[in-house]
Length: 141
Image 1 (cartoon, rainbow, N blue to C red):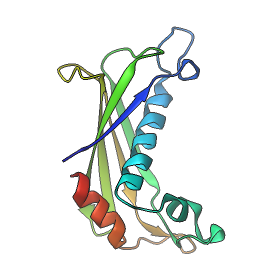
Image 2 (tube, rainbow, N blue to C red; image 1 turned 135 degrees about the horizontal axis):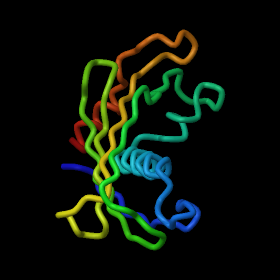
Image 3 (tube, rainbow, N blue to C red; image 1 turned 180 degrees about the vertical axis):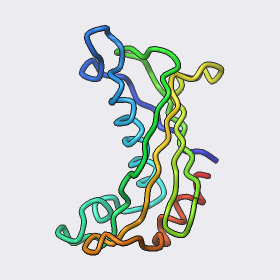
């Protein structure tokens, strides 16, 4: 079952035309990603803090991102972001996002995708995904 994240579009996320600035769609998706990790019990402080903060020696960088903008989004709109991760290989996964205005599931506002690789932070070499990330993928797929 996909993870659902609810948020309200803020004024600071809009451009001079009064619609969400294109890059802020991916920011909202990343916000949903972080919330889904926390909901699955992943310690994001350790995951994103890195070894310098007493965290992990792995990182999950985004190596590809794309978004399609299907309808304008405005300040004050209530959005539900549906997030679905999919395992691609032992060291990679993708996340698909669909944003809906409120509960209007018949007309998505946007669709996005991010592709992530697991790497060791010092060598920058690919590493197998850790078990808690595999559990997270399985929980929300």
